[in-house]
Amino acid sequence: MAFETSDPTAGSPGLTGVRAVKLLVAGGFGVGKTTLVTAVSEIKPLRTEERLSAIGAGVDDLTGVERKTTTTVALDFGRITINQDVVLYLFGTPGQDRFWFMWRELSVGALGAVVLADTRRLDDSFGSIDFFESREIPFIVAVNCFDGAEVYDEEEVRLALDLEAHVPVQLCDVRDRDSSKRVLVRLLEHLMTVATAGATASRW
Amino acid sequence: MKHGRDDRSFEFDPGPLIRPFAVTRGRAGKDLHQLDIITLVVAVRPEADVAGLDREYGDILRMCQGRPLSVAEISAKLGLLLAAVKVLVSDLINSGHLIYRSPPPPTSGRPDIKLLQAVLDGVRNL
Image (cartoon, rainbow over all chains, first blue to last red; front, side, top):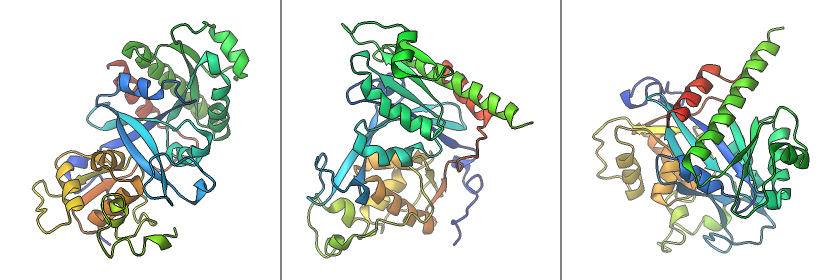
């Protein structure tokens, strides 16, 4: 059929050369994922929903129920137009463990991820870290410094989370746009480092 | 995917709760074009004639006039599940109303350094 393999760069002036990329923001429930996305997005963050299919069997929480046999999970995301050729989407991944099947779809093709951590609940970060490590998706850890939370330095966080030495740790306040922006910059710099190292390594 | 319980949902209008599935006429499984959540689509003809199309098709075509939108954005704007939007968008691709561009398949450990640099520059300039 005509468009099955349509060369997307041809045919429509509106789509020539345009490509979309995505970054993920992961972390425990209530850690500030959507706040970070909101801080840097050019649009008011949007919410989309996906259905929990067979993989969700055993899920008992009926958040966003369509019918009693169908459960959905919400996903908040923002958009940053990088230039006329590239659009960046930022997805805040659902925090609960049982929604990890969504992460699998989301993580395919993702450039990288931010694991947002709360020092009061560092345990909540382990799942995200394990997930990205096992899928070899490069990530950084951003520590959201909530008001009143005890402040740890990067090294303490690194030790507590048992992070590998090359994983950057950055303290931040996701309510602040510049601070959130610096988190993304740090992630992208890390992705560049990883990509450059990979290119060098593969040349042997 | 099995949707045995959906079979009766398009025989009558069951109301807004079931509509997200009814609009796809019970189809929900196959993404013929392997549409991703960030696949971009745009209307082929800037002034697409949406008369005669079902409401949701018309809505999608109208929002994709002249600028590409992702499947995720269409889903959010329509208030329909991603799975349903993928079916509707596939239909519009098949009928020649939309063209699409999916993100490149995951590369085998070869990130596009130029692309990363462009994204980094873009974020720095926010």
